[in-house]
Image (cartoon, rainbow, N blue to C red; front, side, top):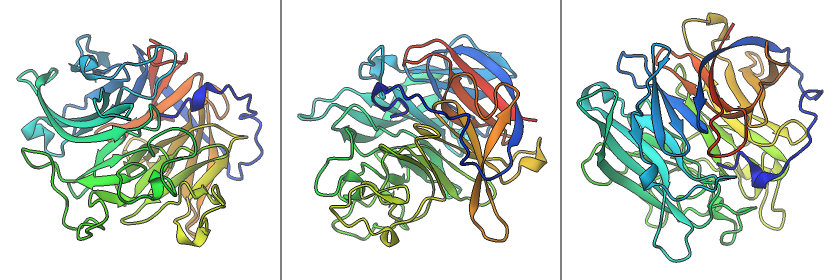
Length: 398
């Protein structure tokens, strides 16, 4: 997932940065549950049960029901995964999304890393459909229907975020194929429209075999471009989400050496990687003219963090004054917000202070999540590694 950036230990003055121009947003973090092994995401079906489903990198999906952890996993796909290095890995169970009609059809989708037999590939990423069993808290692993397979040349930059849009289609984030600097082809996979790597794709899963291409995808009529592509020029989109009110797609794209960025993803747009890193030329030997690419709505450099973790725009009913604030963070444990200036329309960034620590939490931020009511959660773990049982889930509020 590239949140660990080649195991580099950077000694960053992330708590004393003077780059923040906006006032701090003071929030409270309420612990919901702990004891998860490398939790990498949390989501909730719109089925009226208000359950939270926690994904663990090693293959378990676990349920929190009315604040109580259910001991038996909803699903365990560890037997389907490619091996995880005990010290560090960007593989594993990386994404989950419930079908918009889950309440009636019981279908959900997982993105995970599987073994491959393809020569020259490290592994393959799979998007698979599963179905709940007659027990609403247990899924049927035998119901797996493989929807999509993406060969992966390297072990890292696998993306994995999935979400259904208001249009009913499934959006999937794919990293650039891994390694450093997207050294794939002439301008990298991010710029190559003949590969799904380095893209956000959009597919219709409402079929019994494979998937369909939505008729309004930007390249649906092209004979030379992959028709699944919705947007290009991404390095490793680690967590994106739809704003419930505006349907805008906010995406945190992890940077290479200097800059982390937040983008609003739009149909057919190119976000610049590997020619651009944020607002800056990364590969000046090629065409890195910034005017050709969509600029991020926000960026920060590595004096403030190391790997951006995309979040959510708050639209819940519990804290009305938070409406319109995009809450996100950095893997190092730093929290920020973006809020759009009504006059200039620019997205302005400010720090989030909590009762734990100013502009930080104790531990690593792996992901954010949202429940059925629009509340936002932070998925963390205290100690490094894909098999560390130190995961804690927090709810954001006042």
